[in-house]
Image 1 (cartoon, one colour):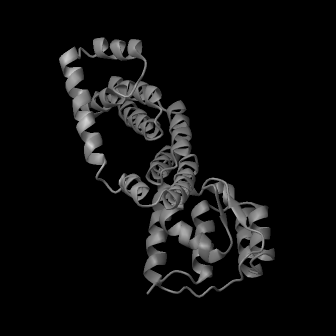
Image 2: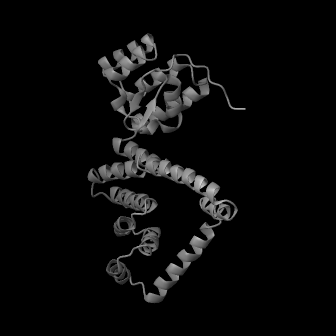
Image 3: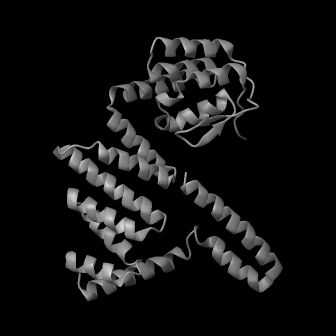
Length: 277
């Protein structure tokens, strides 16, 4: 059985929208649940009078709201702000509060650049690809010419390439992987670029890539063959299973198959909207 959580405050009739996470919350407990795994997706933008008003009016938590207002007035830190919510919510155990406290302290001691990089990586993990790309691009604007920043920039370009590839934007993916390889010389970046280029319909772009990277016709044919074999393996994977089920269902009942197809398409649409943030 699942664990039941006793709510200390009432649920809101009007939700609060977490801009950085693109998500509505209806209670302190829901916010705490979010904080537990996504704390890097929040930032100082939550420290507003509007949020304090919402806590007081919608949640009926006047005491917590006053604490948060006082902290904002004296220009307290974001970790302090979060800890007030964590401790007053009654949601977490003592060990969980200590763990989150240490995580917030770590955030406070890390540079803004480091925290934003973790935030962008978390967007990738959550399959919020457009949000990840936007954050990565902002990071690149603030990067320096130091060797460490160049290496990190290479990693960022690689991750951006992966985000674009996940959204089937293969031209942009190839460009990002090429830039990543130029900066950090990671072999997996040029390999990823070679895989992505196989999906391009632009023959001139493909030939330019092959010439620049000294890939001959036989090597390219082998790459496409490997991808074809990978696609065949994908057909028996969990991701492809709904398609094979629909194909089998068509032989049993076309009416039922059409109904199931509509449901599956709606599910894929919801997943795609999730990718867009």
